[in-house]
Structure formats: C-alpha cells, structure tokens
Image 1 (cartoon, rainbow, N blue to C red):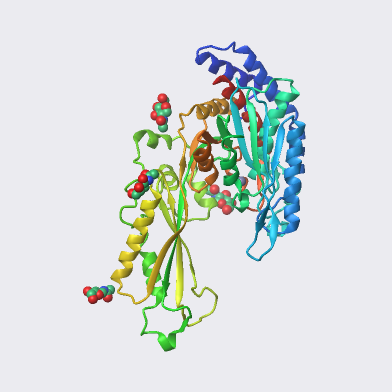
Image 2: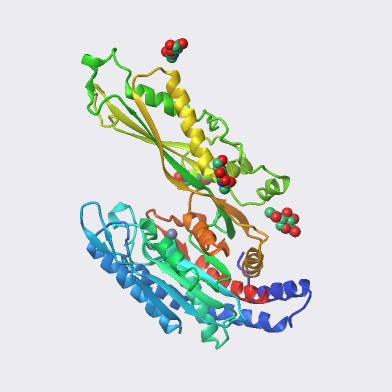
Length: 504
Ligand SMILES: *[C@@H]1O[C@H](CO)[C@@H](O)[C@H](O)[C@H]1NC(C)=O
Ligand SMILES: *[C@@H]1O[C@H](CO)[C@@H](O)[C@H](O)[C@H]1NC(C)=O
Ligand SMILES: *[C@@H]1O[C@H](CO)[C@@H](O)[C@H](O)[C@H]1NC(C)=O
Ligand SMILES: *[C@@H]1O[C@H](CO)[C@@H](O)[C@H](O)[C@H]1NC(C)=O
Ligand SMILES: [Zn+2]
C-alpha cells in the first residue's frame, strides 16, 4: 500500500479535478509532493527525535518523585521544541496532587501552544499526551523499553505509539512546511498533557477554563491516541462506548462467620450476591435487565453496510487473543457487539475469600462490581434506575434477611461523531492521498472520555485519527510503532492540513 510521491500527487490532482477544478491543481499538488519528499528524506531525524523523547521515563502511573521529575523534563522538552518552531507556548501550572497516603506530588503542566493566528485560515487543535504506562525490561521486553530500538522496521519503546510518536508526527508535519519555507495552510494549536495514563487529572477543568480563550477560535480538534483495526489499513475513529460502573453490596454483618458454627442458619451474603450477579446477563451475552435495550440506536441498512469493508481477520483475532470461540462468528456481528450494542461485564467481588487453600469462611459483607458499556442513545439516569429496580426485584424475591445497597459509582457517556462532517471528509481525502485507500471507519469499544469532553465543552468537531497499527501493543510489553506508520502518519497530518485549508 505504499504510494509513491508521483502516485500521490496524481491522486490529489484527480481529486481536485473531481471536486470541480476550483483550484489550480498544480500548486497544492506540487507542494504536497515536496512535503512528502521532505518527510521521506528526513525520516531518520524524525526517528532520532522520537528516540530522545522515548528515553525519558515519563511514567505518570507510579506516584514517585523520580517519575514526576521525568514528567516535568518531558513537558519542558516538548515546550522547547514547540518554541523553536515559533509557537507561543503556555505551560500551565496545575499545582499538586494529594495522594491517599498523605504524600503530595506536583502535577506536570499542560502545554497550550499556538502557531499562526490568521483569521482567514482554519484553526486545528491537536490533543496528545506525553506520559506513559510503566515499563521495565524484566516484564518481558526484549530490549530496554526506554531505548527506542528498530528491528525490521518496528520501533520498539515505551510511548512509541502511545502517544509520543503521534505527537511528534504532528510536529513533523508542521516543521516540514517551515523547512520548505511554506506558509502553514492552517493555524495550529496544541494541547499536550502529562497525566493521561493517570486519569487526565486537571484536564477537564483546564479545558472548561480555556473554553472562551484558547479554544475560542478552534474549528477542529484532532486526537491521535488509538490504533487502527488492521496492521496495514488506515482507520478513522468516529465513536467510543461509555461506561456506567455499579457496586452492589450485600451485608449481614461486618465480621465474617465460621461455616461450621453458622452454616445452615443464615442467609449468606455471598449466595445472595451470586444470585444477583447471575441475574444480569445470559450465556449469549444478552443483558437481562428489563428495558436496557429500549433506547439503543436502531441499526439501519446504511450502518450495517459499513461493517462489510472493514479489515478484521476474525480467525487471527481469535488466535491472537487465545480465545477458542467468541459469542459471534461473523466479523459484522463481532464489531457491532463491540461498538454499537451495550455489554455488561462482571469484574469482581470485594470481601470474598480469593486466596488459595480451603478456608471455611462465610463472608459477612460482600460487594459485587460490574459495569455496562453504554452506546448511543442510552440515557445514563434511565440505566441507573433500571439496574437498581432489577436488582431490588431479584433480591426481594429471595426473601433474604440481609441488606442490599446498589450504587452507580462512575458514569461516562459514549461519544459518536458525524462521519459526514467536513473534517471527517477532509481526513478521508488525506488518507486516500497518502495511503491510496479508503480508511476503515471504526469505533472503539472502550471508553475514551477526552473526545466527548472536547465535544461537550468547546462544541466543535472532534475527530480521532489514529496512526498506529493494531499490533502496536499500547500499554503492554514490546510496545512499538512501525517506522512506516510514523513517517506516513507525518505525511498524513501534512495532507490533512492542506485538505482543511481547502474548506476555508
Ligand atoms: C496462532 O497464534 C500462534 C501464536 O500465538 C501463531 O504461532 C500461529 O501462527 C497463529 N495461527 C494463525 C492461523 O494465525
Ligand atoms: C434521560 O432521562 C431523564 C429521565 O427520564 C430525562 O429527564 C432526561 O431528559 C433524559 N436525558 C436525555 C439526554 O435524554
Ligand atoms: C418468599 O416469601 C413469599 C411470601 O412469604 C413466598 O411466597 C415465596 O415463596 C418466598 N420465596 C422464596 C424464594 O423463598
Ligand atoms: C453520509 O453521506 C453519504 C453520501 O451523501 C450517505 O450515503 C451516507 O448515508 C451518509 N452517512 C451518514 C451516517 O449520514
Ligand atoms: Zn494514550
């Protein structure tokens, strides 16, 4: 699928022609060709910069002063890089974070940067994060996780794909226009944080605060913090599921019991809880809570057809996840149940005996934990009521003398974008130009709150434009980004700037 530069420019010329030939086709096409050539020629420098960034152990998950220092160093390095591009950079001080053990740790700054302020141009804002998940060689890495190492075109290193590589790809695209002494086609803004892997502490508050200042002239937001569904075929992400997390407590007393002394004369909390949890979902994966599917967006023929062309090898997916059989056999059913239908998962029981050995305990108080991945157009407060009513109903039918309490402890809405929105169409054209193919239009079954956060607060078009391949191994050992994805991804962002410019 690698497209040569002359192929790319003829594709672009053709597209311009098809779009009515309003532009003199040669100039943007020539410029794009120069941009692609520059990125191609300078790829080793781009990889070297990624190596310098990966070398910083910017781990936000382990709350240790040593890692916080590394995070501050990482944010300072990025701020410096942006300043050298000519951006005005604001490193927003976020104070410190109080940990449960009483320790206080400083929160790394969020970078707000801007380059260009031409009211005639569109303004695109890129969100990325520079913190990483923990990594240690002994976890099963073949190379040092903080030394970017290339093997067969794969650049191994913690943060290579999540998310330092994509942040740098965006910067590479900007710096290429500058190196070629070309006017940037769009005004560019950056919001870069250092606490994403630790729950984006302080991000929402800052976005809210900057809504009418930094974000006031932003037209489009781009997030590049997820992966393709394929190793080779690019993707555009237009939706994520939400999540509502429940705790159900069943209590007899605070202390545990001995089953020889009390077994047979008690309503055991664990038996009640197992019955409650067992009433939630059947063996086919269907949620048994009455009314739960009532608001789920109906499936249209149009949507159904969209799943056909998506590149997912079910056999390989099954094999690589070491699962003998999924609940569904076809690609379409699997994707729909990951993306557009809710699912209920039971996560654990607090207070239950879970060690090895044969302890004869009757837990006195247990808490079951489960969550429902929400999809458009489910209503969170309705879901909460339905879950509570169902559990109360099941519990009351047991005539148990225990006490039950249900609470929803987390509620995150799903996010969905309009794939016919002009920014999505622009990105699709850019993908066609760089990769010579239509992207997979994908959603993500997990919950990524930032897209919805930007959409809700600043009310502008938000798009997730991933660069990494499905096997990049975010968060796991041997995380990598392919050199090809990193370099073509830099070209993609440059092509995207030019496509966005054409809209204005
Ligand atoms: C299945 O996975 C194993 C390793 O987990 C691999 O060696 C094998 O080639 C895979 N087979 C298929 C059909 O993908
Ligand atoms: C959700 O349902 C509640 C109660 O039925 C209703 O008041 C609210 O407007 C609904 N919210 C949305 C976003 O539809
Ligand atoms: C609960 O009590 C009701 C009324 O006392 C009785 O009809 C029912 O069979 C009981 N249910 C169970 C599961 O014991
Ligand atoms: C997007 O637009 C195309 C072409 O106009 C149309 O066929 C398609 O149904 C639209 N899709 C959605 C989700 O609106
Ligand atoms: Zn990430």
